[in-house]
Length: 336
View 1 (cartoon, rainbow, N blue to C red):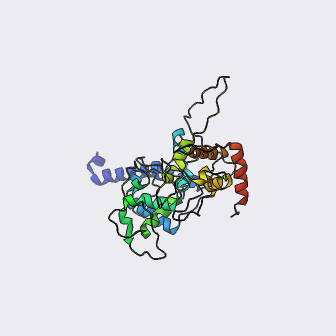
View 2 (tube, one colour; view 1 turned 90 degrees about the horizontal axis):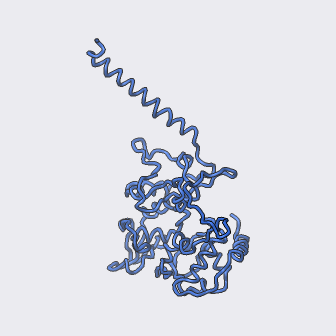
View 3 (cartoon, helix red, strand yellow; view 1 turned 90 degrees about the vertical axis):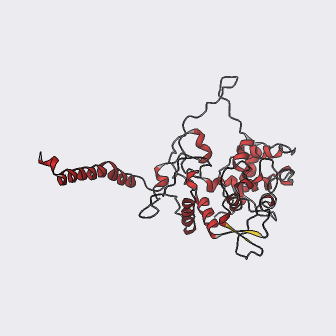
């Protein structure tokens, strides 16, 4: 047949077939997905600084170790309040015409997932110390340090951000460690990573493969007892450390703390829920409890762990009394 002997007809037909098949199985479904999946109503666009930080996140290869996707399995609950969905990525566009490294969903979890890290670890001070040298705040961390994002000055300017790195990690450095603009841009991007709440009335996809509750003696399922140590490790330990001694000049100790051991539960609960900025020489504590929507049971479990660990020996609290204090604390916070 002349068709198979004519290279123009043969390759022309193959090219048209390939283009048509690509449009049918790739382009049209992609356009359809874009039309069917819109950003959630409460989604917040990246700020100018966060966009620059995202570019730094890409250029430094952070996606190689960190994912941004909460799978619908029970073990991923620690990374977000709900599984990720298409709407979470609908407003993310190409980096530029040539590159499509936009969603940064990742494939490896050598480091923690970052989907909701803006809520889970919102402390600017902690993030800067961690970026300078991860071992300063997480002893077992395998993350590389990024000292080139910082400079050293003997006399910082008023508008420059001084990073309170523990002395053990500043040996041989004569001066103050200053965060560069690039470091601040990267932190702005990390702090912007927050799971968008679903619209009121919407039901979040369920986490699958939940562990079964053990039956009590009477045959009914036993109510799970919250693990204060695990809650502390997930939400507080990064700053206050596993030994409760904090980091000098950066994060205050809980071991022997008068706030932890004292009777002023309103102040104690207020710090956990709304953060604190009244301790000279230490960084600002973010509103961890508010960001993570702690219940009275979770707050009580954390307080009881802190009050009975590291040599601390104070009276335990009950969820009932903590609930009254949380309601009182909420009523005193000015409405935005």
